[in-house]
Image (cartoon, rainbow, N blue to C red; front, top):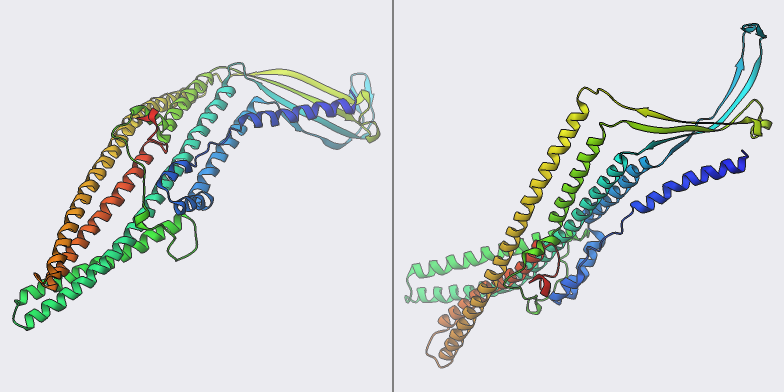
Length: 454
């Protein structure tokens, strides 16, 4: 064999590994569902989400986990290929006094020996054990990919919920500042009434207590606003203490939620898909453990050159090769293989139970989220009615004040009552928005308003 032919064989063997590596790579799913978030008609929110997907450290960690799983497929798949290595050596052989082989006498000598072989070993996978191991690794990768998708859904939902809570805190703070201002005026007027002997001391003390409570509420909402902003900044992986940009409360819009959903929608949930993949992987691991009881067969060989001088290294007469099959069978391992098989069998049973539990949990969470959206919607409608009635009452109060039927103090208290109802209405509206986000999270990050999901 010439050196050219020898080099050709080496290149072919090396190329086989790149083929299986390409086969192990699975196209990454698109986890970013910006089309859904466009239903909220908020360009600022969309821009923040793009920053979140680019910067968030948890998302990057989840992506690296998926890449590691892909490399694990390649690692396990390498067992399906020949293992080729080089075991060359250079030695100088020096014999002592003469060596006798029967009647043949070899005098003392010294010489160089040059050995340049490639060794190859290949497990003949006649039982398909290595193939099943690779399939199991693929299922593991699919599980981790679903966990990555779950991370995207969870972090996106958490960010959007906090984003609207920030808008709520901002609007509530404005209302509370007005409330504190009006209550301060009420306290001043009540104090004048008291000084004039027209109001008892308890009336004045009650108004001062109310003012203190409103001031405490204002301080609390300022604190909450900063905490929410800090959480958003951390999710965006920004190094700033400034408040992030957000839309105005009055521009909020959000998708309508359905009254019911088909429970087949649970098939999109990443936890359900992941638990299904895990059950499949556990089943494959049981099959692998069964095949571990069977004998293994290894194909081995050497190919290379053996010479005594460098200038004759690649001559025809220096070529050497050997090939053979080596069976291997662990007849007794102290029960280790049987224990391993039972461990995998019980793991499979656990995986099936986990899958069944996940199905029930998925249905429950979707139903709970649906109830939440219905309740939030109903509460918002009633709150709108209450606000409209209070607004009408306040308009009547203003008319009475303008014609002199009531005092300024009574008109201020009417303003205060209206602002308190507006504050409640803000809470109900934001709760309704967040309930649509919770439902999006519960159904697995898909558009639940599509006809096939209703």
